Image (tube, rainbow, N blue to C red):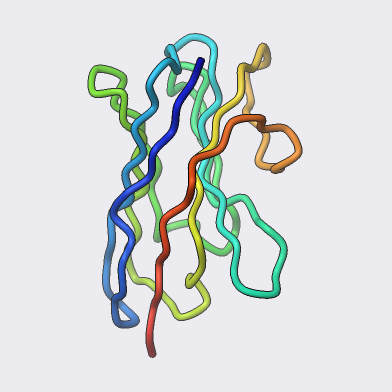
Length: 126
């Protein structure tokens, strides 16, 4: 059974950087899609970035392409989200999520995922 625990959120000024981490106990390389989603107050949860299965595929929301990078260190059982050039609109609760996936391209829709972490808050001030 996969267990996900996020960390690394915080407050930063626009233009700054943060790195989020998510321990991914039980998410073996060949089977899982891993993703980061975020939710701002009053808005729907949106996919930010996905990786897998086996780190052979990654995809990003258009709003973060070129600024964010997702990676998974299987040896450390940790998923990362490196966030650079942060904007106030990046503010929200960030969630790590996982699902067993048989295809080669991971989904970036929240309905596809069935295991979620508790979230970590990111606040970007202007």
